Image 1 (cartoon, helix red, strand yellow):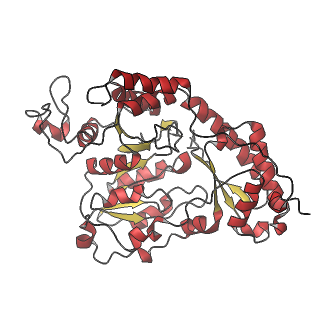
Image 2 (cartoon, helix red, strand yellow):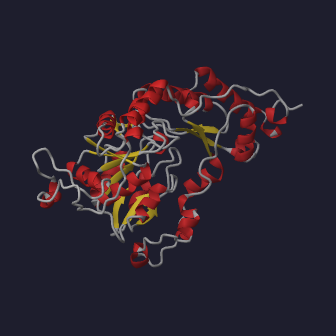
Image 3 (cartoon, one colour):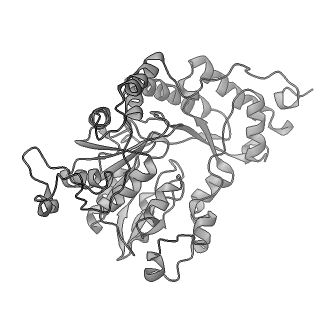
Length: 426
């Protein structure tokens, strides 16, 4: 009889890994206090503002604007940066859909640039070849919480006068050269959706050190209203509106209601108290897995460069080489691993440019691309590294798994090693 659990052998483990979300009585009480107060909206409450300040300070930014979700945060950041019809924005193809669709929602065109094979982050070596006279911005995605090569990206942006909006939706507590992710470019964007390391069920936030951009984002998320400084002034080009600002029915920018609720803010403030300790555990476990899994033929952990001084580890990634597993495809490897008690994911099944949305250009009512790029055809886009990751290389472990014990990590290593040893029997 095979020793593999998938064929009736004894599994490496039967105990479950930590579940997500983590919650306590203190979290429930924080939300209950808001409910019982009857003050549920951030326009009359104080907690959303407190969370903006607390998270901005935690990440190392001067300002924060709390929003409904990370998707909205991306779009509003692009709007605040002045992205408009016909502009081009460079994005990676290995990311959540919103990184690219937020560009479309600004009537602009996402231009896909391939990822680095060792990090799955935007490859800075390929960016300049994609820049045209229409390029206005770059959205580097700190995927899984691993910092992009921001030194090279900043240099490219400066040379070509491009804005940088960091997609740090996996980056809570992450650092590049000890500077917080989301605090390096003009703006950074975060998500607090249910799977995220810091979660309120939903929620998002924009960080920036620029007071004018902060004021614009604050206006865009609150119906286009403008909030005056304590001295009655407004920063930068918004100063022209000082006379009418401050009136609740005066709307100056194309904003909407994208505000975070007080209940979400209460839950996030409570969860923020334990984020650093959780991040420390995830990072320690990830480093251990890097070392142990690298010794198994056919398994390659991702590279962590010296500039990535802290990694939030929203996911733990490694690369699977089928040739070292007797030619067995990734889906068979994952099935055998699950039978041993370790659940992993293949991640994204396709690059963003192969989504029906992009292939069929279902962008209505956003039609800027029709005028500026009438021959736009995403079927001609090819990013080989991303395609390889999607087709059979990438393997993801959830951030909750990394909250386990050292014994739990040993079980992961043992399960992968066992499947490798008996790969011919999968």
